[in-house]
Length: 398
Image 1 (cartoon, helix red, strand yellow):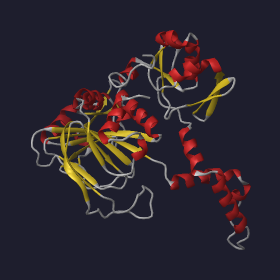
Image 2 (tube, helix red, strand yellow):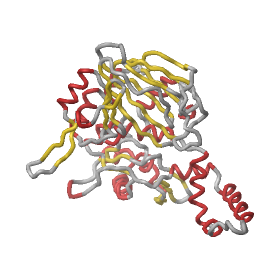
Image 3 (cartoon, helix red, strand yellow):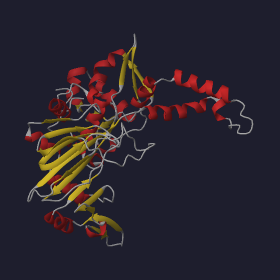
Image 4 (cartoon, one colour):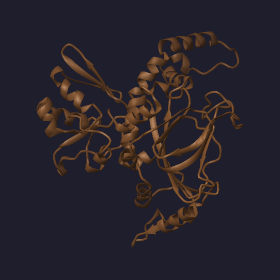
């Protein structure tokens, strides 16, 4: 999946792939204003807030370092039949922004097709789950106090500027569920300075950081933070805990009175560790079985004319002597060998317009696309979803 934001982030950080994720602090610049405005603008973020029924904690406002009570900027919209839906009161929200405030939209990828596609591109790149939060700050409002995240983050400054301070870790690779609360900030300042439009920053898990416009006067800042949660040894052991249930010895009650069977249990656990190593766990993670959210295809609305692969991670295409296997979403689909060109096109992660694809790989691409849509591997490329690719990716058949 060739996505221009992913490529721009790699170039800015001087990376060649996702191998450097989590390995150290990094900073660079994207020198393409049009790309930045295509990703998200302050007005687009406010439009998202206006048109959707959002609730805390997905949408929050902060002033002077403290969260503003939702009653200040949320109002129940009541229909003529008395049905009540919480909506952002844009006039009150505008008042907060004029005074100086920070707005946070968690999981913007759920509400905006451009953010959805950007996160999917980064997931295909990193082979890990990604979500994006958007932060809009006006005038000299402060942001979150010094804190650390339990995942790696890539920050992209899209508009305006913001003052940052990044410190080292006070506990190596801390976790959300951990043996230590990790409450004491490190005194080791890794970088302090101003992030301006186009700047990119990679903050590994556990690094303390804070961002603010405090004292900068009139102006604004918009940045997005892509949170990338990588698999750990603890994740692998939790996965093994699910697999152990296949073996009867792990389903028996532990004998607290006589202590019998503990040796056999220990041996079975050691055998399970050897039989299902971390590499198998990572491969299974790439076959995550949860389909993505997308508009279903209904032929009563018209024929299928455009599709895009919408899985969390790239499907595996395996060539055999006489057929092609596609492994994704915990299932295996088998096609005739002649379907390979069409499959490579349809599973590229790029938009595919079927009329154009027919001239490139043959008429069978339409039938294969219908199968992949039925299996929830590909999604219909609606006009709304298509916006997520415009100016950030090209058609697969181009």
